Image (tube, rainbow, N blue to C red; front, side, top):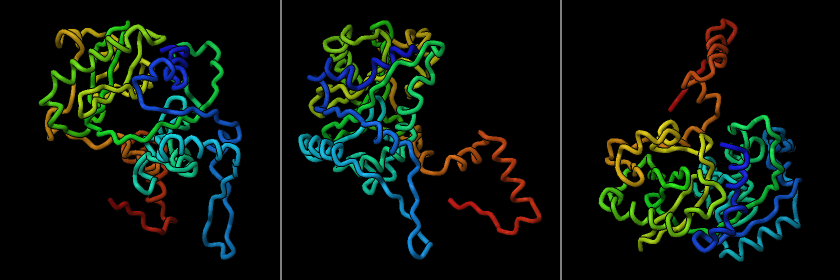
Length: 312
């Protein structure tokens, strides 16, 4: 995966090309002071009783006005994202556990709680193979998409190599959807036709990943475009399979189509780990040995009088 491929997958690059086949959206330049605020942990202000803290946010009157105008133009409810990522790992912090936003404060709450957004702003080229080359200049943008009630069972991720559709994966692979099993041939055919008629040879790269949604009428919509590389979740495939193509090619003619086939294979959402402090995740999985050693020293130390317990 090259840096140029990441640049080409920015929303503002591909949206004009496929505007007729995706959800109506508006793009606003992200001012530098807003970027600084999103990357800042916030300023703590002590109250009079010195028992509580509140986080104060700076005001952006001109930007706020433009965002509200855009939200109203899109029907009053929007799905926000940056150049590449949406804050899918932060929906737990919203009152309705949804990415639906009605105001700039809703957007800020999600963005400041999202590791995906931080990655966009700080390390968009982290896993590129051409690290020796200079990073391209990025003009960061706030993307507001008209809110649509999408059923997770209708979303699919498609992998394209050398302008050939080689694999399709159920997007929400942690759940079992009976209609996918019943409609497998129709779903696969609809996606292949959509790709050949609207996507193939029209994008700037020949290797890429695109997400689609198939609605109740059988129509396919483009949802997103992503780089063909490990920065993109391969879902029910592995990147070794996708890059070599050997095992996938042996499965069947046309693209390999994988989906959860029964309730037995249902898994917890991979975004659940973002709902608790990262230190707790590292301790539970043993990913950070030094944190585990420090924790054991704390528990075993005679001077440590407090009892430490974990509850589920």
